[in-house]
Image (cartoon, rainbow, N blue to C red; front, side):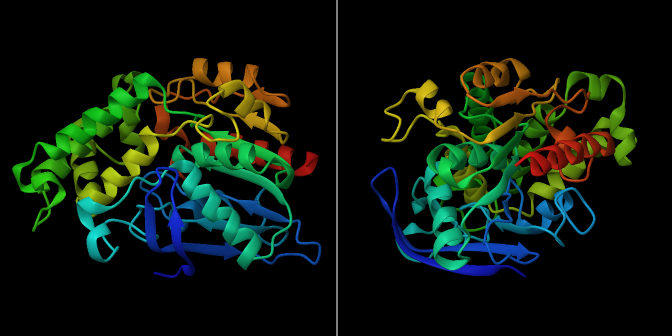
Length: 336
């Protein structure tokens, strides 16, 4: 692991539980300027790490690490920051508490202000669960954020999205080896089933109908699904479920500051915002994004026109989407 570690101590979570001896693994790129106002925050996504997020920025890019100080914190549950697989004592494995999206971004705020001494964020951006965290951060700390770009994400988990998440979780838990999260060896059958169900939602119907998987080097749908199986076999099952629990509980209004009111929460965001769903995303459809944008003060909707579904914006996967993102990153950074 090449990340840095913020030892956050015991964290009281939204649930009232306490995450003991919490550690937040993160990485920074570039240098913070003397005014401490050139920072960009890019939280990680569901199976992402700070390394995989590196595809979104770099020298000479729109998010230019020769100009901006990029901070990438790893989400709790991703196997680097505090997770079921690395937590000690009764909070290891199935005993890991529910960590909400707000719990994550509150720790990100502490990292930025207490450790890195960042005063302002030029941009907060993220894909998928990274987008969910970006929304929450901008709502909770509006005076700190100049610009916001959530892509292929949402401000809360919709009922349909939750049905999908319950489905993949059920596929994993059905493996007898899983043993309610107390497995002694990895639940291989469950992890493979989880991956196959997940794969069908990650891309669109058109992606499969038009054989777009061949652009990823696969000669059949089966070859693509086998690759997803192998990828998910690298993950700890309880880590996957801990992040799913964070995702399922996501709701920008679920904070005492907003008293459960989605409009109040979205209107709290003062940053110049571009919300970018993908036209064929099965998790976060443009219709949901349009509703969220309609409730915001300073936001525009920019739909990614792609048949790649949710994975259209997977880091570095689709060149056309990466080009569109580059343009919007540049626009917001120049306007901020």
